[in-house]
Amino acid sequence: MTRSGSLQIHAPARRCAQALMLALLAPSVQAADAPASARAIYRCSANGVTTFSDTPCAADAQVYDVDTSRISTYSPEAATVRKTAAIKTDARPVRARKEGSIAADQARHAAECAKVSDSLRELRATLRAGYSAKQGEQLRARQKKLENKRRAAHCR
Image (cartoon, rainbow, N blue to C red; front, side, top):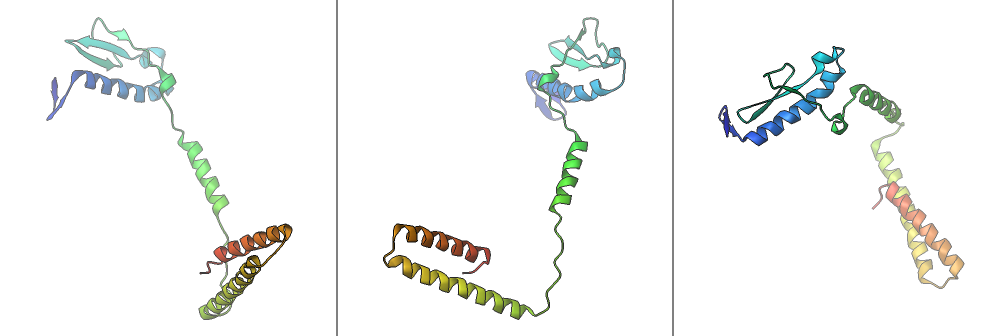
């Protein structure tokens, strides 16, 4: 085990962390407009410790080929375009306040809710009485429509 600061890191875990850092940095290194020799990554082993470097670290340094097929990339330009497009489509026009008081709006809402509740009460009474199969289907469809209207209007 090797001590790094006050944290002990097991050698295989450190090598795994180094390989992970290398895999994360590899796309940015490969994307640079530099000659192929500058983009090479070298793998060296000394005293059982494996290190990765952009320059040969020892005489026995080997060029390390990164498997980029398992690396995903992030394109912030595409994300910004989608986000701005979503903002434009979600923008809703601001409704102007209608003339009248809040009390009048509440009274209108209560009247609408009472009307829907009365219609549902009459419909349920009709459903308890006798009816044909065709009438039953029509009554149930009307009941569903009234219940959806009641939910949409936020009636109790």
